[in-house]
Image (cartoon, rainbow, N blue to C red):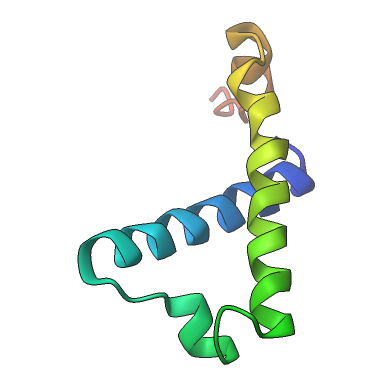
Length: 77
């Protein structure tokens, strides 16, 4: 997994946690941190999370053989 894919995965997880907070508690953490849903920084974060989700679509359709090949292998003793 490349560094961009790892960053995208972290951003996607952040977005999922934020959506969970919205769904369960009606609390938007990103908006609370960055000054409301219409604040420039909040909109940037929302946009980055959306782009990260699109990048992660590639992982969904990546063949299993490629995923296994990307994982580090334990060293032989």
